[in-house]
Length: 152
Image (cartoon, rainbow, N blue to C red; front, side, top):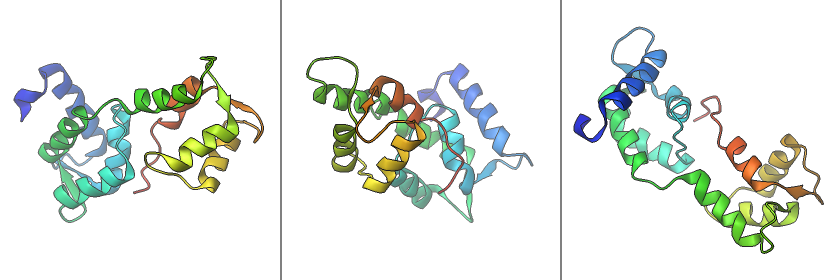
């Protein structure tokens, strides 16, 4: 396993893991998994988190070796930020760097990990975008993917 990860990355992963393994017992609480992964720049979907927990969680805990397995699995996945931005670019026919909020909402409720209209409205409000306004997707997407407190 470790041979798939460079020594430098392994040290970064250990350091991050240890921030959540305060008692130094070799595991983190599964409730902290999403936050820990996202703090490393990994953006697993809700479904991926559920799958990881089903595969690796034991008594509400995740061991470091299993955590590494998750990181390797995520490393094989394409860059979600790029994928999402590319999806918005497909709708930006004039290549202006923004789309109408209505088009943003359509994409977010129709493709990928589909969000509800209510969730998209909340995102638009959070970023101060009017329902009839424009979404600068190259600015919004990275902000949407920032780490959140673990809620899974």
